[in-house]
Length: 334
Image (cartoon, rainbow, N blue to C red; front, side):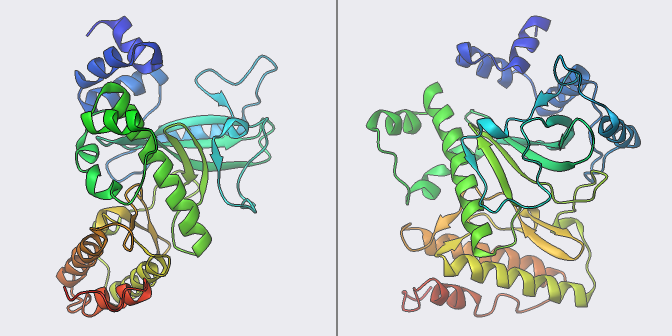
């Protein structure tokens, strides 16, 4: 691939989306990450989500940098809080930097995936008095795995324009962009609703197009919280994590929802607290014809994981409990 094509790819030239999609498909995920790091001069976290020493030093240095009158430091951007399509629920958390004079520093990749990449971003005031770490999730418009299985998740949703629905079904270039936008919008709406309901989810900071900024779950030095699947909890910790997860599933069910893709891979554990992530496919178990099936699968998947770690019978009676909480206590037997 030619150098100028790579530059166009990373510049996100929206004027020629089809050719950009074609270019993107020619580069595998490791190569994309390598090129991005080479371009920005930023080290990525290690396989466990921890920033390297070099990255932590850069983070510390950036906290001391003062933005010049000419603009933010090279590679950074002014905070786009004022341009957000949507913002999180009020009152805004005390830790969140909302001043328009803040600068967003991109610190590296937290996670790469076929549907979206997640980046670590520090939003800081130029004088260094206040700063916060955020997770920037950026959906890509492409015919990827998530978008192949979106029909069941979208059954309970509506798209008004017939042209848009037809484009999405036919997976045209325009349609794939619409799908990416719909997933981003759906995830932000899910996070807002679940945060307001008291569910253990990251605070949704803002959405612009297909980029979501969320609360970073991890330590102040940029070390991301581990996923549940990475842990080997002792019996007491295992029982406590199951209790937390059951409480979270009940909270969702009371509002008529199930996660839709729940597993040990999209549950974080930070300081002993369980946090649900990756929620673009949140399913309304009442209005979606497949809602019960999604709920049953969520329960089966996590109960199997807990049972394999030494907590047998974790899922007993849970489906019936959640259906009752969702107001479907007299639903047909499974």
